[in-house]
Every structure is written in C-alpha cells, then in structure tokens.
Image (cartoon, rainbow, N blue to C red):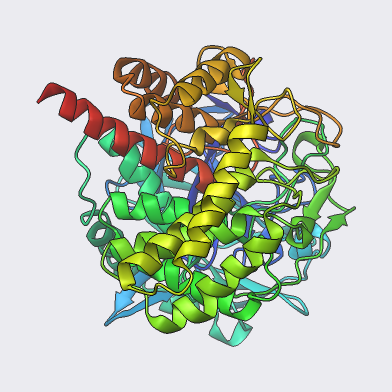
Length: 609
C-alpha cells in the first residue's frame, strides 16, 4: 500500500528497480518515481537525484492521484524492462519503464533515453506526472522551454546538461523547473513519456518510436539471457543477477561499475558513504568467474580486454580502480548542497581509494589472465613479457610491504593476510603460465618465491590460539576475505587449518544465523556498518568446497530471500532490521551470489548421482 503522504519522502533502498542501456541507468521506485538518473554516463552528474535529497535532488514521478494505491513491480521475463502495476479499487494501470538498448549488426546501440509507457488495462484511473530535473547533483534548477508539434516537447537546457520530456500530454509549470500534469485513463488508453538527453534540436515529440524501441530492447535482452547455460537451483535468481551485471557494463569499453549509485550509506545517518560508479580491478576475477560459469564467455573476454588496456597504460603505477573510460584521477569531493539519503551526509563524488596501495591487484590481474588462458583464449609472448613478467618483478619487492587491503582501510596500512594470499596467487599463476607455455627462464625463481610467500602466510597469518587465519599479521581479529582461500586454490577447504578458519568465522563473524560481517576490528572510520552480503556467499562457497553441502544449502536458502522484490542485492544488510544498506544494486554481491549458487548447485547434483 502506497500512501500519497509518502510520495516525496525517502523509500527503503529495497524499493527500487533498475533500468539501463549499458552506458547509464535509472532507479525506479515502486511508487513510479525515478529518483536516480545520471546521463550521459553512469558517473555523470545526476539529472534526477531525489534518492540523495528528497527535496532538492529532482525526480520524475508517475503514479495514481489517489490518496492510497497498491503497487506491484516486476521485470518482464528475461529482460531489463521494468513493469510497475498500480491498482486502485477495481482499476489497473501498468507503467513500463526501459532504456532503449539493441543491436544494429554487431554494434550495441544505446540512446540515453528513458521511455515510460502508461497503459490502463482495467477500469478508469486518474494519473499524475511530475517532472523536475535538477542538474549537477541538484545544484541547478533549469528553465523550461516548450514547443508544440504533433505532441509536446519540454526542454530543460543548462550549460553542461540538457534534457527534454516528449509526450502528447499537456503539462503546466508549477514552479521553476517543475512541470505537472493530471489526466484520466480508461481501459485501452496508452500514453508515452520520453526523457531524451542531448541538444534541444533533437527533441521532437512526433519521432519517439517507442513501439519499435521497446520491441528491439526486449529482443536484445532475451537473446542475451537465453545464452545462460545454468539450470540448477536458484536458476531464476542467478539469471536476474547476470542481467544486472550485464546492465552495469559500460559498453564502449567493457568496464563494469561496482554500483550505479554514490553515497548510499553503510549506516543510516553515518559518514561511510562512497562513490561506487567506477571499475575496480579487484572485481575482475570475480566477474570473469561469474560470467564464464554461466556460459557468457564473450563478456568474460570483453572484460579481459578492458583489463589489458587499463593495465598496459598503468603498469608502472597501478591503482585499484579506474573511471569507466580509463580515467585515473578520481579525486573525492563532498557535495554540500545535498543532505544525503535519510540525512546520511556527506554525499561524495570520486573515491580517494584510487590513491591507495593494494597488493592484491597484481595477483588478481594475473589470475584473470590465467583463467582466460585456461578457457581457450591463450596468452601470447608479448603479454607474458610486457605484463606478467614486470608484475612478478614488482611483486618480488612489494609483497613484503603493508597495504590497505581489500576493504580499503583509511587508517594505517597493515600486512593483511588476504593481500599476501593474492601475492601468492599472482606468482603461482605466472609459474603455471610459464610452465604450460614452455617459458622456463624464471621457473625456478618463481617457484621459490611462491613457496616463500606461502610459508610466511602459514607462519604469520595463522593464529594457533584462535585456530584460524587472521586479518593481519599479529592480529587477533578475523577477516571474512580469508574465506576466498579455497576459491583461489591457496589451500583446500578440507585442510584442517581451513576447516578451523571456517568454523571460527561462523563463531565470530556470523550473526543472525545468516549474515557475515567482513570484520569487527577498528578501521579508522567512525560509526558502524552492516553485514556484507558477499561474505555470506563466500561462506556458502567454502562450506560447499568442504563437502558440507546441506549446511551450505541451508545458509544459501536463508540469505537468498534478502534480495528485494526484483532479485536485486545491495552491498550490505542491517542484521537487526533486514534493511538494505550501501550502494545498490551491488555488482560484487551479485558476482558472489552467482559463483556460490553455481558451485553449490553442481555439488548438490553430484551428491545425488
């Protein structure tokens, strides 16, 4: 039940769906309001940003004008076309939202448009539409200009951004930069609203071609989804996660963003609010594993190409993430004009983690190359000589140094066990590549380095009194990231040290029987945070690899339901309330879910045969 009094307040993060065209995206609430839209790219300033300031951020609301109404939201099968169904008394209206995305030959076409189709399927219903773009993250309220041809074109130009609303419905300006319309619909009526980005000369209401674009967009997503080869338990949820990941790929380069939002908080009212609209190198292995496990090898290969281009440009100065077109300078800034989601300030753009030293990058990149090599793509001598060998040379000097780790702590650097593990992975994969290709020059040296790193991790990274691998050398704290050890084949899940680490993690970091905190140690930042969903999926995968299939299945079943009504996952969950926290939808969480679901389903099938 939606109450009219709630329309312009903050919704739960879980109340949103996402549409997109692989260049940009929009978040659509269950109340019919687009509260987040950045154009022309994922990382551009927002045009609609009410999710970060319900008063000043801007929105595009379409909904019944009744005081209360019911709503159900779902995706059309096998697509990223979103349907929001409104009902009031015995009347029904469907709002269909999509961003055109389709193939012309081998080229993926995306137009930067949002199409909103309103159809009355039963009875009569009064509908209202409110269009209030706010440019530059809510800092600019644009003037309205309009012209009438066969329909209406309302243009909102500004110096750096320019959008228009195209429709056959008449609107009235009720405040500067805000237009409003109210109209009655009866069964069979259909009205289209198109948000178009670009110069005003392109804004012609008679040329929207919504029918063609909708059919082409449906066909694009269906053809892609039908390539999925997974048929195990949680099939529908896995496919939805794959569709989300595909949506978060920036098609011009193949980069994948961590999330399409910035500054959704890890604690309501807290300051742990970060911009995730960039491509983290760390995601590389995880997204490649996820796509390959479902049969999407083309996407995995495309991401390897992105990695190669990024690393070739930065081999002498690696950084944890890049802009989606390879930008390196991602300076973090605070936007003082926005109050933040439910008052969670500051709102940030950019992310200063780009300046951090994170040791795992070297191993993650080489592991991605090795994975690609093992699955048919191969590695040529140039890649080996100009990328792999220099990285191992760098690791020879760097692996003994403290770093910021996977969780990008902003206090002092430490000797994180997770980071040392990835240094081992890098040397191990380089050794295997060289051995398989007959490049024997450095085999003995790399073998010795690999063993040296392993020995140190076992000696300094495992605490006998805790019977567990720990967060950092000398620490008594645990780190859920160490659950990745079996996945990267550093240690068998059945090794006594790993078995005891799994049990210690369950004992100390698992809460409410299903959520795993990443760690409980101080990290130099004020406030608290929720449990990270990907950590639960790592635990599921560990239990699977340890042969604890029933336990893994029970844990998976208990946490799968904490996606939202559309199958979308956030970064974190508040264990006390079950509310979503952090940027949304979170690619890292969906990657972890896919990998855990595929591995567990395969193990369940094998146990029955």
